[in-house]
Picture 1 (spheres, rainbow, N blue to C red):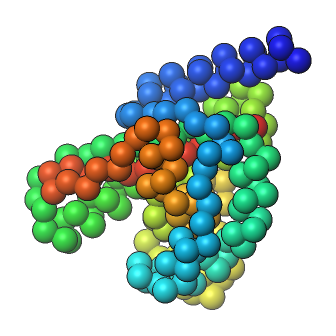
Picture 2 (cartoon, helix red, strand yellow; picture 1 turned 45 degrees about the vertical axis):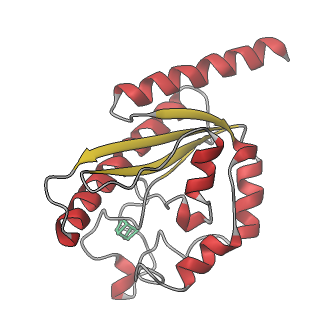
Length: 193
Ligand code: SF4
């Protein structure tokens, strides 16, 4: 067992370095068992505070039930937590929303690049989770009644959409999610088998 575990660990550390090289900063390795899944996060989706519930194919109710998320996360060994920081020039709500959307879109695309790198390195079932609702299309297909995603190879759910408590999970890795008026933080992760 030991040689395989050592190889796996080295592969995960290489992925971490790769993630930093393509723009994630900071990154942090966590055991997947320390990811916090909480029904209340899903309830917040159902309260529709962000107005995406039922309006985006990468958001509930189109995502697995929380019980399935627990099983799914439990099948992974590691999670590479990813953050991306973006300076804010203006702190009004609309400007912040625009910067968040642009940063989260870039974050999602890079997270899928990282997932593909993990796949080619032998982590066949690695899976990236992004931030917020999928923003690849200006209007999600579901809003036109179409249940087929336009970019199934690139669209990924968010951590929170899957029922993961982002703050507690990052805290478990010793990272804080800062809420500042001059800088925003986008967060996601890569699950590694
Ligand atoms: S890629 Fe387009 S259709 Fe697919 S989930 Fe994202 S916004 Fe919706």
